Amino acid sequence: MNNRIFYTLIQKLWICFFLIMFPTIVYSVALEQTSLLRIVILPFVVPNQADLTFLPDSIYDMIETRITSQGKVRIIDKQLVQNAVDLTKAEYNNASSDTHELALKIGIRLNADYVLVGDVKQLQTGFKLTGQMIAINNQLHSFDVFCNISELDVFIEGINRFVEKVEQKLYGSSLILPDIMPDKK
Image (cartoon, helix red, strand yellow):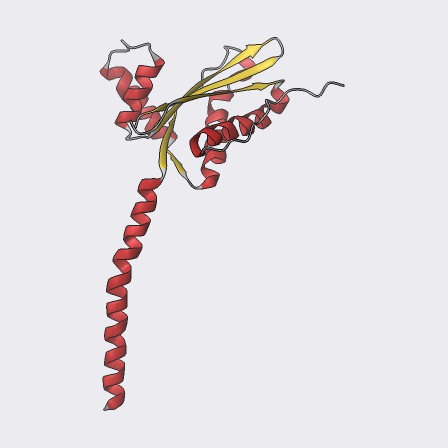
């Protein structure tokens, strides 16, 4: 009889433990989810050259995989972004050619904290990757980021450097990162 009382007591303790811990775990996971910065990446504008048509999708994929590795941000799905771009443009009858205004509307539609817009410019000495993180949340600050890339062969390194610069501004690092330039031989 004593064993039965003992097991019943143990069962009740486990139930109490579970009832106390489950909401705590759920709350901590929910709090972590809400503390992630939600970022929309709009397609980057690239020069109209046949050999660069792969860049907008590649840039999105490279930025997404690199910036989320810290676990502090959540990149909004590319298809959701494209749907929001299409809806927003249709809603305003393509009246707004202002990228900043369009980015704000898309960011609000997708409940984002930031929208990253950017472009790739071809220079005589390579490429310049320019981006602007537009803050949707009034408690955050917008900022610009750029990276010079010497040639297409080191474009991935340039994206890495670009993302490092974005992370510096997001997380407040003071490390100065140089642009990717060719070694002078």
